[in-house]
Image (cartoon, rainbow, N blue to C red; front, side):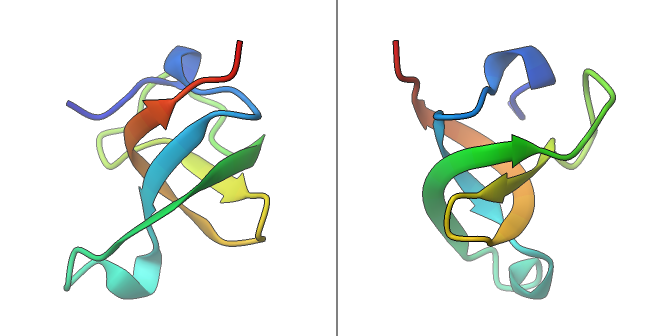
Length: 66
């Protein structure tokens, strides 16, 4: 199940898929810096920018800071 926008916030650790890894399915783990998708849901995942600068669509939420 792809997470919705309300499940993601800056500081959340997530697994994203970057555009150039879509064919291989390679996931990148990181901490969300900015949420780029404005809509509450997206069929391919909410697009985010990680603190490292990488951009991709969230496939799974790993953990959320309190």
